Structures are given as structure tokens and as C-alpha cells.
Image 1 (tube, rainbow, N blue to C red):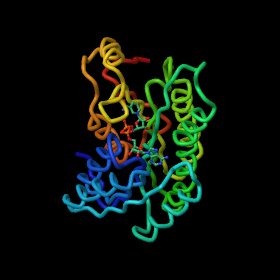
Image 2: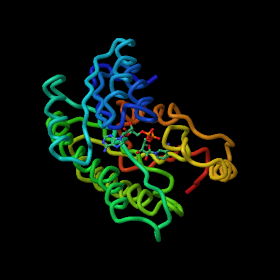
Image 3: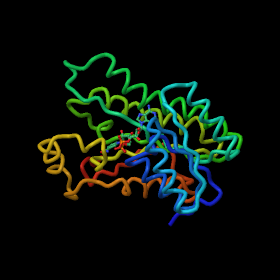
Image 4: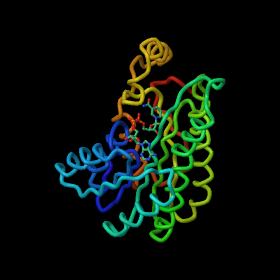
Length: 248
Ligand SMILES: NC(=O)c1ccc[n+]([C@@H]2O[C@H](COP(=O)([O-])OP(=O)(O)OC[C@H]3O[C@@H](n4cnc5c(N)ncnc54)[C@H](O)[C@@H]3O)[C@@H](O)[C@H]2O)c1
């Protein structure tokens, strides 16, 4: 297991699904945790679970697309922990429909949460990491940001943008010993995918060589490595976790 003692990890969207699993696994590796999410009840539940494994947790209600809330989140985090070593930009949403039926507001909302959110968080947190001369930034992209998907022009564009953002940030911050990488999950079983109809799920399964959907822990295991000292020579990369669905 990759150890993260004395590290402080901030995870957006950590109240449920992939983000919660990441928060749990980083805490099990020894990190103290900051959870930023819009779901206050979910934050409380995750917080309790992390506390049972003996780590400190700060839960903050925060919309990642609102700069005022992000600034407040960073302020509270510094007051509590005095540093931030690991940032996982995981919060994300879908508003799926064919482009012809897609409203401008659903385009804007998805871009705001999935792309502007990571920009606001990364800008604020990287200033702290620069002073520390150490940092790990991990962005949750998606396989559809690499291959496109009908019915998801907003979501796939936001995730493709996040991939390009990751590479640019990696180049800007490398000299300060801060790495920035993206993960591109395929189909992972969470509330986000639960709502898809059975036919859509079957069609995804038919193109997954490993013949199963992913689990949040499959993603958390890579985050644990990317957040650790051991990944220090990896930056600007996009790593797929999709059961072989998309091979580059
Ligand atoms: N589940 C999948 O198959 C899959 C595949 C590829 C990528 N992803 C990505 O992984 C990430 C996590 O997905 P998930 O499946 O766990 O989703 P989820 O819907 O289960 O969880 C997302 C979390 O983000 C939070 N959130 C939403 N909007 C927010 C905002 N504006 N500010 C702060 N928090 C906000 C939600 O409250 C929730 O706790 C997302 O970025 C998603 O796009 C998921």
C-alpha cells in the first residue's frame, strides 16, 4: 500500500460514489481529509466513516463552480490543517441529451461544474502547493472525453477540456515539484450511472473486454498511487480505467 502519512488531501465531490471511495482509501493510507461537496448529508456520512478509521476530516459545503465558495473552502482548510498536499478534482455532473435538444443552460452548468470547478480549485490550491514545493493534483476526466459519446456533447467536451487543462497545468507547475495527472474512468457503478436504462448499460457491457463494470475502488486505487511519493516522475498523463473499453 502507498503511504500518505502527514499528507492533507482535498477531494471534491467526496460525499458519495467515486469521491467517497477515494476519501476512504486516502484516509486508510494515513492522510487527513477535506471533503468539499454540495451534498451536506453525504458529507456528514462520509465524515463519520473516515473518523472511525482514526483520521481527521473537514467537511465543507461548497459548490466548486462558485469562486467565493472555493476561496472560503481553501481558507477553512488552511485554518484547520495549515497545508494542502493533494487535490482531487472529482466533482462532476451530467445533463445528457442529444445536442439538438440540449439547452444552453445545461451546456453552461456542465462546463461550470466539470471544467471551471477544477480551474478555480487548482488555481487556489496550487498557490499553497507552490509554497510547499510539493503537490499532487489529480483530475477526474472520463473515457468519453477521449472518444466522444452521442448524447453527451456537453459532458464529453468538459472532460476533453479537463484533459487539456491537466497537461497545461502539468507543464506550468512541474518546476515547483507539483504533478498533475488525469484519470479517465469508463463505466463505474455509482449513482451517476445507476439512472441509465438497462439497454444502455448492456450496450456498454458489450464493448468492455473485461466484461464487468468498474467499481469506485478501482479508481481510488490509482488515486492512492498518484497521490503518493512513488508517482513523482509521472505528470501530464491521462490514465484510463475502463476494463479495456478504449485502448489508445
Ligand atoms: N460513474 C462513472 O461511470 C464515471 C465515469 C467517468 C467519469 N466519472 C467522473 O467521476 C466523478 C465522480 O462521479 P460519480 O460517478 O462518483 O458521481 P456521483 O454523482 O455519484 O458523485 C458526484 C459527487 O459530486 C458532487 N457534486 C456535484 N456537483 C457539485 C458541485 N457543483 N460542487 C461540489 N460537489 C458537487 C455530488 O454532490 C456528488 O457527491 C465525476 O467527475 C464523473 O464525471 C464517472
